[in-house]
Length: 92
Image (cartoon, rainbow, N blue to C red; front, top):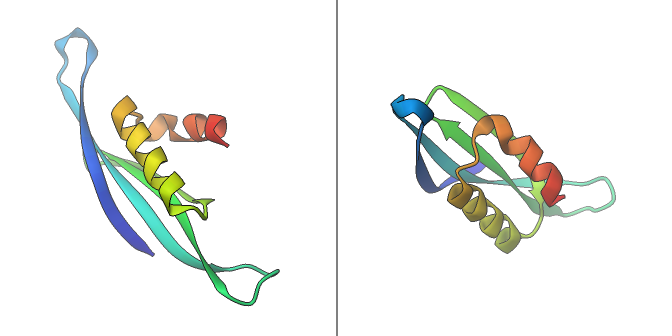
């Protein structure tokens, strides 16, 4: 699996309780599906919050451009690891 850094977001927390740094990664894997004899690339996303909380979702799409657009939109919106599945549910 290849992991490519796609950017960071810094969110200000409510009540002046500090900031939260989020890092966004595009994941690329080669997968062999039963229906096909050749390998396909699949793309997923990882979000890391302050190096202590992370969420990984693999195999979201086989379209790299679509995956790049999605990870950029997640970064722009400041989506946290805890909310990644909820957001992706709406995407799919």
